Image (cartoon, rainbow, N blue to C red):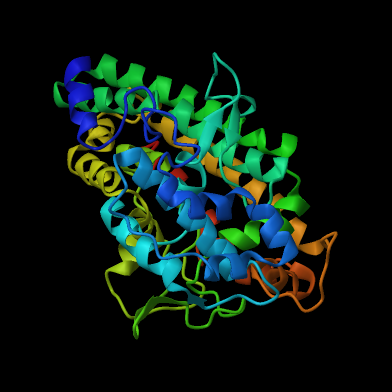
Length: 430
């Protein structure tokens, strides 16, 4: 059984040991000196942003070819570099820049197409392909063992923020084979196997919650909100932050196109969506900041479904495969409400709901409450996601509904609806 699982996971670039993290540590630096201009630009990124020279640096970059990229790790490193340079260029000034120069646009579009990802700073670029280890015998489920390769601010706060996500993914990796085993157990009507797997999943989800709560240890809410979060913003639903039309990806010679992308968001975590699919949780929240009647189909799948487009293609196909195979909810519902199977299923649902409770609490502290604080280097004329949010007077309960997430969502209502939908999936009666 274990060998079959490993074989099935390989084709989706999912590891039975590391989950959605790479099998090997991400590259710290491109090995080919041809790409030194990119590495040099991103090496001192915090200083270039602070000095206001980042846009000049990017404008002076040559248009490098992707033909010299060899192997998946190099393509991933190139994607991380250009994602950081893109968002630093857009958000690294007094006002956002809505035209991306060919030196970034041309290679980034090619690399993104190869990796089946959008050309922006996705969750996987910011964290899962952007970490390393600090000790010889590391525990990658412990953020203290991890270090970030590339950074917007160079702060411990930013490193900790992303490395907590890596630690959660690393710990959650052990739960992926467990869920596949539960599906198999359901197929052969092995109730004991299903119960054992669901109980272990509940324990694992509680552990993920404890790792998430470690965010408070080394990432200050004010630092996250004012220094880090503005660079995570996308170009979709960002009119109030200064990008009414999105960003024009200039490819030179009169070529180019306007794009609107969501920014980096935990909703882009394949692991979190795996839990939902396995447990049969269907989200209807669209996450839109304003009503959108252009698509009837979006009402059912909405923002959560759209976030799969920000995952690598193989991971996206893993979720599609899991959607076809997942049978645990129907199996649990086929048992009586007072059965051990139903109890184990409801326990797993509640554990996932409690994890989302912790996430909402974290968002409230790091965004809603932090928006009321002033940054240490406050500049009155600056416009970005942080300043646009802070300008919402008082941030009362009513005004919280307008707080926009980095992914362009109407943040708090969306998170609460997602949490409530999760808990509602439990059934205590026939």
